[in-house]
Image (tube, rainbow, N blue to C red):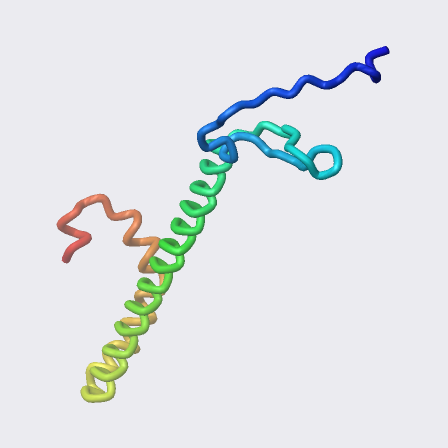
Length: 117
């Protein structure tokens, strides 16, 4: 019985409706049928999260690059100075053997003045 009843037509005006609903073509490609509601705020939040994660990753890479670039500059400066002063290079090679565990010893020192000197 229901199949033979005429469908009622409803007219509506929506402002920015495409931001919250998905429409498909109706029968015989006439009119429109609402097929899905969606949440644009959630989709925006997902996009913002992706952008923020990319920015954080870029900052981390930049930090690593800056650290490595500084280390390379320090090594280059040290190399140039040691080539100009061979007597200091010999002293450095002697001290280098004694400084093998420097990071571990430095971590154990509690006095700030002792760390600086």
